[in-house]
Amino acid sequence: MWKWIGRVLVVAVVAFVGYGAYDYYRADLHTRPDMPPGAFSISYKNGLRAILVGVPNEKETRRYFGYTADVPFYIEDAWAFCTPPEGNEKQEAEKFIKEHSGPGERFEVVCRVEVDDETVIRGFITSVPRL
Image (cartoon, rainbow, N blue to C red; front, side, top):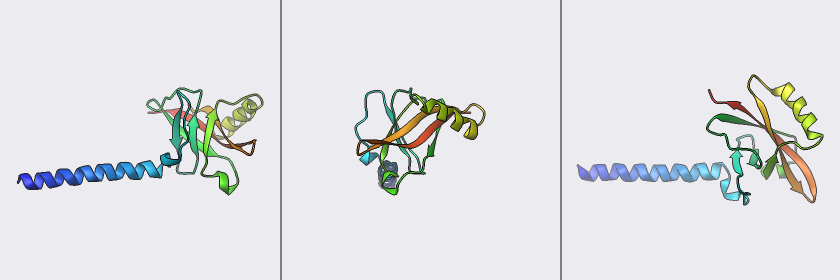
């Protein structure tokens, strides 16, 4: 009997480690660049890979939604650094949130990728309270 319990435990551990490795690669965490202190990352199925800088990590109390911008194909899988909107981006952010938001949704960050000294907006992230 102990032999079967041992086998079941081994299979459970292997399955747990296997799923962890699958999830790690699915989220593309193996290609994530170094993050600044206090930053956190989110990877979306729509291709947006975001490192949020300068905003508190509220994953326990809020759900984050990533909206992608139209970018060239070679930027789609790049990790973007995301910060609160700056200057005239605030007006665009307010316009975006009016068009796309629902009750309780707030605009969090603008995600940008640097390509040959040019900044490309990769997407936007909003959040809503967890219910």
